[in-house]
Amino acid sequence: MTAFPLDRTTLGGYVPAVVTPFTPTGEIMEDGFAEIVGWLIDHGARGICVAGDNGESWTLSAAERARLTVIALKVAAGRVPVMTGCTAPSAAQSVAYARAAMEAGADGLLMMPQTYVLKATSTELLRRFEAVAKAVPLPIVAYNSPRRTGGVELSLDDLESLTGIAPIIGIKESNRDFFHHSHLLHRFRDRLAVMVGPCHFIFPGVALGAAGFIATGPELLGHDAGRIMQVGAQAPGPELAALHHKLTVAYQVLMGIGTWPAAFKAALNLMGLPAGVPRDPVLPLEADALETLKRRLSEVGLLG
Image 1 (cartoon, one colour):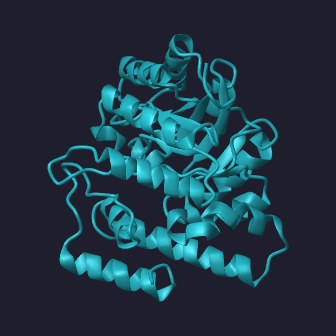
Image 2 (image 1 turned 180 degrees about the vertical axis):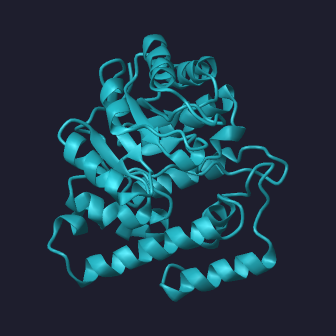
Image 3 (image 1 turned 30 degrees about the vertical axis):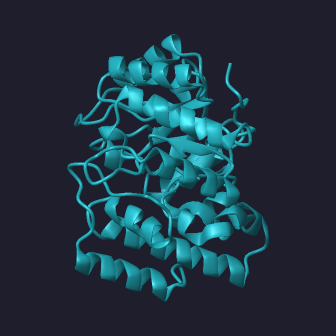
């Protein structure tokens, strides 16, 4: 039994994919992780995603995912749901990650198509979600990010089929084509919690019925990240335009400097949060890249 009843009505708003702080030798900084989770909730997060892309999930074992889930749940203390990523190249490994998350008490799972493959048929896509659904009775947030899966994409028809074989309650949509977002929202906004991925699509997505966002960058806005849904529900005005510009710049900078997520961790460290450094094979930002990051974020008021 999970602590938070996660479904399409309770998944929404600001749901950050939390970083996993590592020491220079690759150990998880558990106290730092707990501090960041608490900071995010205090700044308006309505959910926490553990072992997502920002958490460098590709470096995490099943035991590490479980441990991070336990810590996040302890900090959340029932205030917000905690979901855990279970994506892996094989269905068997995804099932193992999902079981570890369930045993740790996760409220739900985040899962994308198979990684590190060049293509997948619709049948192959469906079978891996079906395998996880049969093994682990937790709600699933599907995750579509062709950039992270070597071009494998969940089409709208694939998503339709998934809802018939797995307990899909929402989707994190990170396709960078807004045509896709528009058709997704039109077709599924009344049945699934559509969570926007790219920062510069958040406000347009909210206007079209998105339930919230799981994105890289809103964290840098501090308390304003927790107000995005409120601002997005209002008539467009100067505040919305200013926040949209900050989100757009933050996303471009974080994705464009160094090897991701090195810039994101560096930005959080600059804000005083113990984000640590990336885990091998990603290296921390070099000095010139760090100075560029500072300058670009300072120009839009995201660093003091």
